Length: 207
Image (cartoon, rainbow, N blue to C red):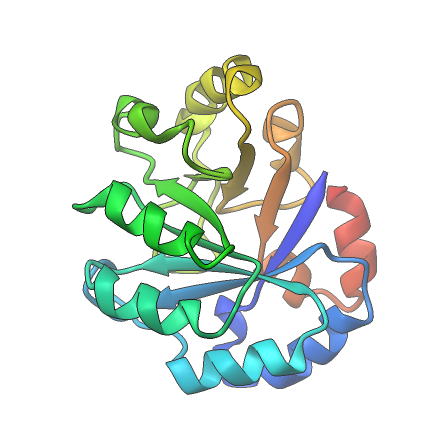
């Protein structure tokens, strides 16, 4: 199991958190990008995001939660992250998949807990990962929603037809990881890791 560490809950203290993440064997730094158009809250500015990428020695996994995709995807392509994921609950999905792939950046689609999984079916052969949200997006520290498990089962059963990784984001800790370990390739965890005294020990409990 790969682990992506979210620093959303460390917005006011991200430099110190990144120093700690750099000393671990975390696979990714998960960067939540919110401008208030898709979620109630906002997160890191573009300049902060650039600084985060410069400070971090991990692959950066960008998760865009916005309806202003043209602007934000164009901006974040220029930061050259490992991966850019945006939400299926948007328009012109294929156009933005192509835009990201043209720059040789891996592309993912995220899906909210209440969105029907069938909305993502037409794009499964075009993307590198599916990010299943197991909380309502936009806030850290929420509880894992078991209702998303059928999505994970379907994605796992059909994975061999395509070439995507399954990523789960929301409420992941040493207990809830047991719900997803048979299906997910990557788990995103924030406060479980960043609120702990030992980042590496917490990561070990997820892998």
